[in-house]
Every structure is written in structure tokens, then in C-alpha cells.
Image (tube, rainbow, N blue to C red):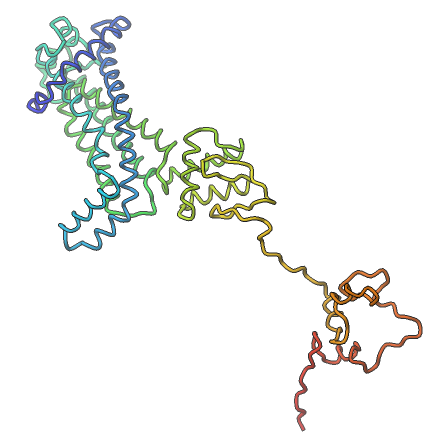
Length: 432
């Protein structure tokens, strides 16, 4: 471990300088020899490093999203070349190159933190052994050796003996209890962060070996932190616990505001976005417009949650535009279909009006010799048919006129078995 720490000794001086500057500020508030001053200096160092690593974190998120998008293609390659590992690796590298994705990008924040982590370990190890390092001189070294965090010296370890702990002015029980609690919190925060990523921000529609590997790492990483944690000084445990809490909070923010498509987090986000947009009638934030723009651009490739979002906007009389904005939609001008394709109301299919029973019966009695409704409109001198409105009732007959007895247009023939439309029903042969 000392060899690895010495390898990163080029950054030991900058790390020790940052700690000393923060200690000068907190020492005026809590006292220079207190654990609060030194502990908060380490916490501030973590926050400063993580702020500087935000661009790498954003790149990590994009790389993780790209890897999740490629999962179906990766699965196809694995199934196609399952008996040829070399060809499988070549096709995987070709896929990464074509999509511009680098699997190592997801590890950038951890790799970038490694020099600072080992440099801090080297600084705290020098405090424990009583040797100056970096910009920490004799006076600062004596002050740091007096600093205790909840009874445990800053440079004490879980594996230290009673003589070494007593030399730092503490008891072995206090050191063991404090370090054990910090190791448990460190492992628990790591487990929760990984579990949150797997349960909420993973596309559940795609089942690949990559997901199984992530689930395995969810249990492996906490065990690794617990095993290595017993050899970390208290100050390093403070550093690692702080960075785990920062990662957990940062990931919660990303999952809530920029979830992975197809995940449970996206379903919850689109539900909140639907309520907000339907209440205000527009998308206010730039991040919201970016999400809506991406959903509109997908067209028919939208997942279940995205289709529900578009349908909810349609029911509320809103239409999502290609630039991510939401406008009021006019039902007479355009109708938003389930896939977001606008169709004019005039293009809708016109259904014929349903006729009443009396109109259907009166239409059946009309023969080929009688004028139709269209003919009646052309010749106004002829009487109106039963499909048109008339001022006098249909049953009214002129005086002295008798209904025809055997005419072709008599009602008796329709009642005696003639089909509607004038066609005669064929007679069946009588049985003798």
C-alpha cells in the first residue's frame, strides 16, 4: 500500500496544501487542534474534488446511457458468436467504434479520484508515524496528532495495536467502535447507491448479461470496502464516506431529473412532468423541453411511458412540438393520435346517418317506377318522398282516392313477402 501511495506522491503536496488552507479557516471557528477543524478540512477537500470532477461525471452518465442503448446489439453479437470468443470481441470493438462509445468512460470519476485518495492516505500515514509531508510542518503535525473525531485520532486504524493508539492519546475501544461504524456506513452507502442505480434507473425491457454483472457488483463493492476499510486511517474513512454520500446524492438528482428511458425513474418523472405541464399549459424548464423534444423525435419508437405522456397531453388539449415546447391544440384543426401524428378533422371518415325504422319501411315500398329522393329534389312539382320532411302528414290521402289493391307499388305486396328494395322472394315448391 505504501508503494502505491508513494507512486502518487507527486500530488501529495497539492493535497496537503488544500487541507492546510481549509484548516486555517475552520481552526479560527472550532480551534486549531480539534477534530472538527481537521475533519471538516478533509470533507471540504472531498467536495472541492467532486466539484472539479462534475464534467467527468456527466461524461460517465452519457457513457452509461450509451452502453444501455447498445445492450440489444451486444446481446445479438453474443448469441451469434457464442462459440467464437475472438470474433465476438472483434465485433464488440467494432460496435463501440461505430457508436463512439467507450466502456471505460463509466469508470472515469473513480479513476480520477484515485491519485487524491492515495495522496490523502500518504498524508495521514505521515501524521500517524510523526513525519512531516508536503506543506505540513512540525506545528501542523502536532496539531493533527491531537485531533480526535468522536474520540478516535485522525490517523488511527482499526488494526492498530493498543500501544500505537495510546501514543495518539486515545483508547483502543474508542478507535474500534468509531472505525467499525464508519466502515459500516461506508459500505451501506455504496450498496444503496448501486442498488438505486439498478432498481430505478435501468431499462427493465432489456435483459442482458451486463445487468447481471451490475447486480453482482452491487454486493461485491460493499464487501471490498469493508475488507479494505479496516486498514484505512480514520481520516481516509471520513474522506471515503463523504465521497460515497456525495455520489449517492448526485445520482439521486440525476435519476430524478434525467432518468434512463424505459426505467421506473422515467415513469415517475413523466408522471410529474404531465401534472406540471397540464397545470401550467407549458414546459417551463430547459431540461423539461429537452426531454419532451427527445420524446417527440422518437415517433413510433416511443416506449410505454412516453406514449402515456403524449396521450395525457392530448387529452388535456395540448400538443408537444418538435422543439420541446407545448402549445394549446385545437380540436377542430388537428387531432393528436396516439403516436403524435397530426391529422385534420376534415380527413376523418364521415359515418352515414342512421335511418329510423319508419324511413326504412317506407323506402322498402318504393318501386323502380317511383322517383327517388334525388329525383324529387330535381323536380319540385312531384311529391316529396318519405326521407324528406313534408308539411302534411304522410298518411294523409286525397279525398275519394282508394289505395291500390294489386298495383306494383302497393303495401300489401310488401307485407305478403316481398323483400325490401323491390326484389321478389322466390317461391319454394309446395309439397304434395
